[in-house]
Amino acid sequence: MWAAAQGRLRADTVTREETPMTTLDPITDMRAASPPEDTEFVRFWNEVLAPKFTRYRHILVGGLTYHSEAVFPKLPVRAGDRVLDVSCGWGDTTIKLARLVGKEGEVVGVDCCDAFLAGAEADLAETGLTNVTFLRGDAETALPEGAFDFVFSRFGTMFFANPVAGLRKMRRALRPGGRMVQIVWRDPADNPWLSMAKEIVLRHLPAPGADARSCGPGPFSMSDDAAVRRMMDAAGFADIAFERVDALVRVGDDVADAIGFQLAIGPAGEVFREAGELAEAKRPEIEAALAEAIDSQARDADGIVIDSSSWVIGARNPGD
Image 1 (tube, rainbow, N blue to C red):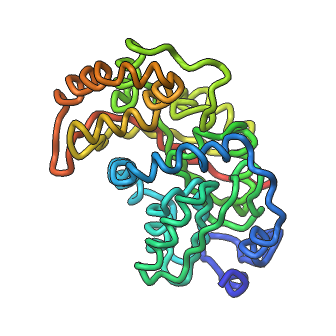
Image 2 (cartoon, rainbow, N blue to C red):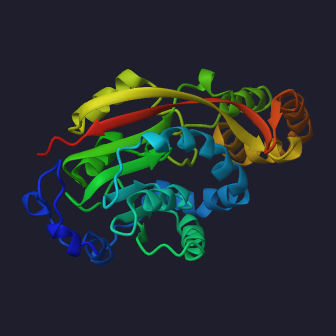
């Protein structure tokens, strides 16, 4: 499909032959390349976080959908496009993108976490779609160049250890003129679904030390729009634009589910995990404090929901 698409013409773009490409088959290239040794962050995702995220997949996929549903109708994606989904997780956004581009298009989902990709492959098998490929990879180190019309990432780029390098890789994956959209969390004050639980846990436990194992910079590392604009400018993007999206996020089916979720992952989960035996000793009082705060939150048909806020950041690759 990739090679066949080389000759297609688009009325509002250059021809495929005029678009510089480093390869006619970027999927084959990515598969054939010798994978670099996993970084500490990648090992941490696979060894520590993946089981916790998988346990609460019903919250993460269902909750984050509130944000992607607000964004997807506006994405600059057309039938026949080649699309890259960076940090695709369980592939729900990848599959949505595949339906947008249609059978003449192609979508590649890339993630560093084996468990996520296994889930994505299982879900894909039930769709009947033939225009999706999932690949294991670290977007900061290995992406094909000049191969895609559109690059997307939902809540993945905040964990780049070197955000400028990762964003530059994403830009270079685009053909000249190609578009990118990433969704990142805004500041903690606008995201009580994460910050509230951390504040409560820190009343009972010490903050993690500088040597704590982590998943990377963290969910709020791209909350400052001015700082992110500088990152994207340094990565070579043009026409950088920010749009704020406020939405309720699902945090659990019920109070117990929400408590378990908060103590497993996210900022509160990191504090609890790093405190070790002390956290377990104080678990009853921590859970009681969380239960009081969570029980006061709103509910909808899917469970308990709390306010959240994200940046939808769009940009264009002007070409090197």
